[in-house]
Image 1 (cartoon, rainbow, N blue to C red):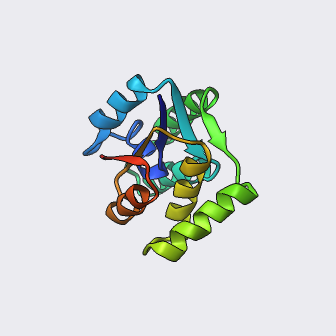
Image 2: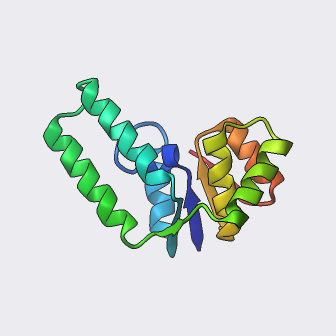
Length: 137
């Protein structure tokens, strides 16, 4: 099963918060983990913010980054292709979304994801409208 994660949902794999257990469960169920090409910089940005705010140590940051890099080595990463951009623009034109959230949707559509995992309410509505199965975390 191809399971697509938006950045904030996939970050829950590394930073324990509400929804983390469900993310881990979907990771276990997936035959393929799918992410947009923007996921890595967004997740690393979140880790950097945690370090700047002294919520994690530099050692913890390095550990989180190492785990993330190992996980994405086997993931399906969707580049920002013309097809992704068409799907992204369609999502923006038909929903109230931020640009990055729409890129995740455009990527999931392009990858023919079986499930889209998200923590964002507006994004989940747009995902359902696009015809994909969505899971709230």
